[in-house]
Amino acid sequence: MTTAEPQFVASAANALFKDLRRLAHDSTAYRRQGRLWLEGDHLCRAALERGVRPAAAVFAESFWTLAAVEWSGQAERNIVVSDALFAGLSALESPSRMGFVVDMPHAPALQPGQACVVLDRVQDAGNVGAILRSAAAFGFRQVAAITGTAALWSPKVLRAGMGAHFGLCLVEGLEPAAMQALDVPLIMTSSHQGELLHKQQLPWPCAWALGHEGQGVSEEIARRAHLIVRIAQPGGEESLNVASAAAICLHASATARQT
Image (cartoon, rainbow, N blue to C red; front, top):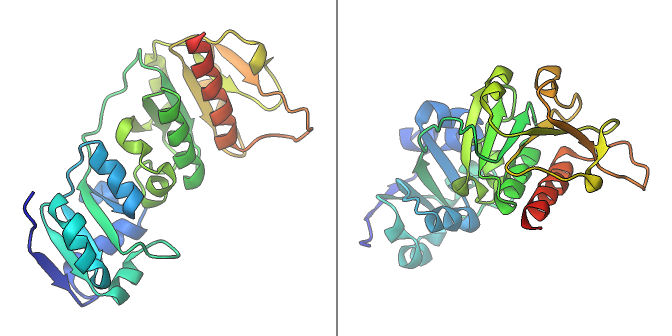
């Protein structure tokens, strides 16, 4: 790849810088701009490994000398900002000194027969990102987000997902009624009712419904459940964090699939 000559930005009033900062700090700016902000070495590498070509690469000025060797040929354009500006751009406690701007992928349609994770108003960005990582790890390539769920492509969810986004089909903004289209059994978890997970013969493919951190799965989606399960907790805790429960349930499905 040829190395694009950099554009230097030294003012916080620069219109390009303002757009970048909105992408980095506003959880829904990606919907308005049609672009994503990926910050840090790991997330940028994950995108490249999935064949994503960034529209722009952004570097702190002190990093540009090194970046010009390894990174600058990856993007259509290079933007170099002063270290002070990059610190204001970054949403990390320790700014990584680089990031990519990538175009939003096309919004996919729900695939009825595909193994799926249904996020029903899961609101914490860290939980959502962690669930996406588990979905990718355990073979659930589709994630369907009900309205009220944290924005799947927001900067915080992207950071928590650690690159999982780029291997998944992500469908967001769905109403509960859209789950009627699923052509696979729907399984939901509960902290106080249902069959013990480890004693079940789990179907494949299937859809796992994971609910709001406090309220759980909505009644409308619960009515469609083929199976309700609970996770054995011999330690006596009242409930598990939704991301922890997701990892256990999706792993159980992956294990059952291989036996």
